[in-house]
Image 1 (cartoon, rainbow over the protein chains, first blue to last red):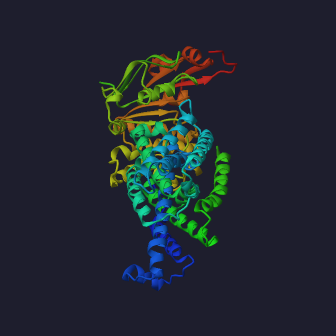
Image 2: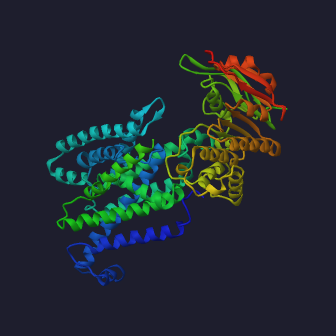
Image 3: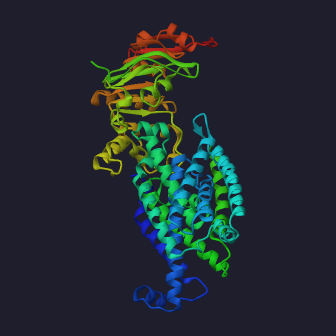
Length: 333
Length: 265
């Protein structure tokens, strides 16, 4: 009913297959060759050789982390776009990721050891605060124009970047290289433990967003029309904003700053299934997962030593796409 | 008979700028009330106050005898639907999906679409002649078609009170007439109370039971079309010289602008 046509029956199986294919490709790519047979044995028969260890403790966790991160970023992007009624919104562009990075760095550099469960929560706090700051700064006469929003996102993002640099400079020397690498957006830290830390946050966030999907549909009408159609606008907006910040924040805490996934993927998913959030959210999650896993596989294939962060690949693909959307949107309004 | 929706002495403004002063309006079931007034007279503000978006600075609003603030959002939306002057939807959304959003107050927040919802949406699209456009995206159709979709969404909402803010602004004459016929049908079959803000003086006189003429934030005249639509009232409110006579075909008041530069209001 809220969708974009009759092709939906095919879309979800295809998207699920794309994600599985991306996971398989990622697991098969790397310096140690792993045959499908060896992979099958490692997973289902519990063999214990080099191939099995590489697969189970390095590649599969990394691929799964990529799927979780990509799916969460895409879901968060969908939510921010509905919240701001703007197809150009994205946690990265709005400065949300920067805020999350400051929150996460505070814990990682100055408080406790890595991957503490506290990390995603602090990143969530940072994300929520910076999203609020951007939104309030962009607000003028009770309305928010897309241009001001992006402008303020850039300003707040630059400010947060300065803080990040300051924090890294002041950090204990031993922690600096790791922090810098993490900041560039990387899945190399995909130990099974990090997947386990991230999973509950992503599960909670995506389920909450899914429950809000009817409200998100109505938000697209604008605040007044949504209110008159029976929506508790402020309540739904607050819940959406907190949930989207939780998703973006927890992802940043685990995998650093990976840009543009939250922007490109929702757009692609909308083309496939329309703007109804009941279908858009799951489609964006699957597509985002597949996109990030593929980007990471590409990054690893391009630099076998593993020096190219996945954030660089998504930005390479995403920045031109963003310009295209900006031009097209500007031409319409 | 008790009014379905009423405003008593409503005043509103931003800062020290008054927008509405002492406005009292009653909407009765089975009646179409037309809200007339020049640009900036406060018509949209009044509709926002009546729908609970803005709280009046003075006076009070009652929907079925209760202040809007007492209602749960969806309970109120089942009683009152609004076609506002809303910003366009910047996302790809089909006409059917858009009209379907009108069913929200009848659905659980987490629930799905019932067969009754589907039937109501189909009927609303049929009424507004949108069935052929059901799978088109809102961004692909014309402004007039979008306006009809907004009316269809409000009809699908199935409320007894409808507030419509210039719903015919972009419509051609056929669809203007069709709009007023639909409202008349809803009035006669469902007993709705409707408030239609409009600039279409002669059509209003054909279809409206009562007219409220708003000017400079106050009610300049209120009553039956022949009481309100007089050359004096129209000149005072709009600054335009008009002739008012009876349409020989229908007997309704007909307002014809006369040539000559409008005077300052």
